[in-house]
Length: 302
Image 1: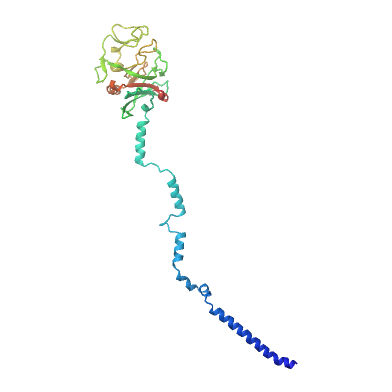
Image 2: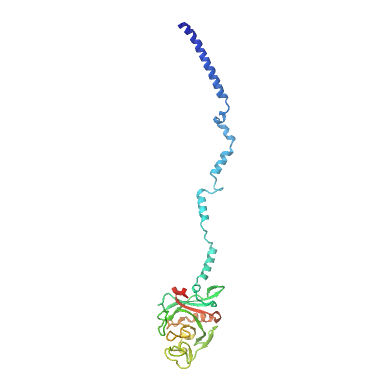
């Protein structure tokens, strides 16, 4: 039996080896001839689709020339969202318009509708004796300066809302000008009627007389009345401010716009001679002019 087994084992081994060899040959032949794995394992086939790799990066990471980077996009969006500042020309135009619209004359609220000239005399405070005089003309619905601002003097005790005779204050308020201007010198060229004063021409400042606070020709009306022809240089030329007219006794009189002698006044408003003449020539009764006397802070109430 061992001999028989030994004789059969080679046969079986040979058969087993042959069988295994056939199976392996069949299996190897199938893998080597299978076509599907070729695109997977063979990278040379990738260049057959060159367009896709180029287009995909272009869509994901475009160049700045095509579309701005995220930081540029943010800055652009912020700029678009924020209001753009006006151009220099627009700013200049707005500034000019603002100057016309926002000057001191435009702050006044009680001017008559037919008034197209206004003189504003304003002080830093009620006790100040120095002031600034501004003259404005209205044209096209807008107030515009007629002259540069002028330095002026007022009463030695400043401004008062409750003026009294002899208190040396200038009354606050808005007033018209009397129909006649006066002066020791000849008419400088006013549009108002003008009277050149001479002897016996007075301003009646006697509260107890019937002609209180009016021009008077004749004998001295008494009290503190002023001899107009003798007060120089102040009364070289003057315009009468219609304060307390018609007159209430003891409420003050003789409030004029006149020439300065360099000092505070008794209650009038004074200007340097050249400035005064310019204003008197400019004032036109057809413009129904007004004068406003006020601290700067209170201008809005007139």
